[in-house]
Image (cartoon, rainbow, N blue to C red; front, side, top):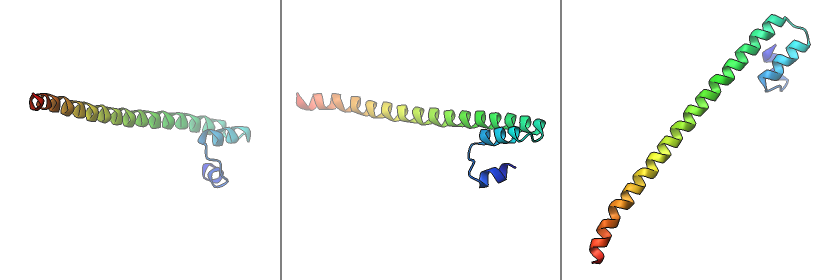
Length: 82
């Protein structure tokens, strides 16, 4: 059923579960499918958050490194100017 709905262009897995429920297909299967969908959505969200957190950490690390380099260069420039 899921594959058939995807072939017809239904992209959202939640929509597939609703369609199955409306057609009165085995309600316990739909409930199980719904739980699986929610769990996979949570897993995807957690993975996305981890990726974002990792990219933010690497970005802040790069900014800190760049700031350290600027701070290191400034005292040298002051001595050269004197």
